[in-house]
Image (cartoon, rainbow, N blue to C red; front, side, top):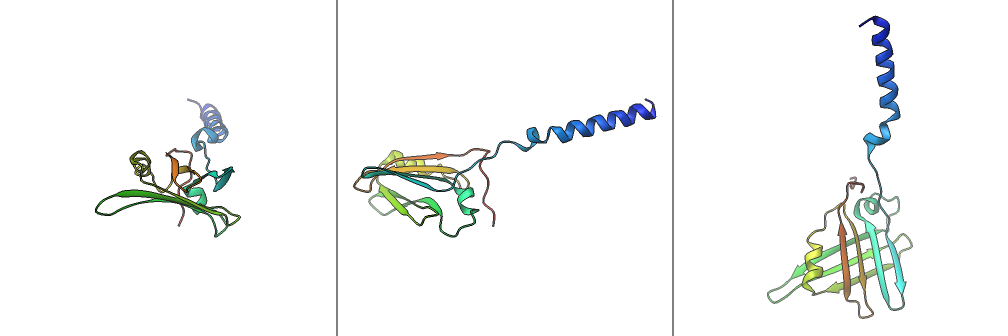
Length: 134
């Protein structure tokens, strides 16, 4: 291979790598805490890493599974950047099971009814979600 061919090949490879960085980077996403209401019912959602990495000191979202000798339950809570705080609790086995899928970088959403009982809990792990930073 001649010197000019090697240089041309090197330049072409460099240009191709520079133009294809988006393909190497991967899709990124995440969401701050959002809270919505539908009458007495409500819903909250957010991506744990995005919330943790936010510039404000208010937002949080998460769930806790707890129990005692006779029962087990899950409590979920969230606070948005406007300092609105919501929470719900459930003793339903399927909702408790969903909480076990939660990771520290997952996107979670939960909803509740007028009595404050959690009616849904969704946990989504996805490579697009940003991990928490210290």
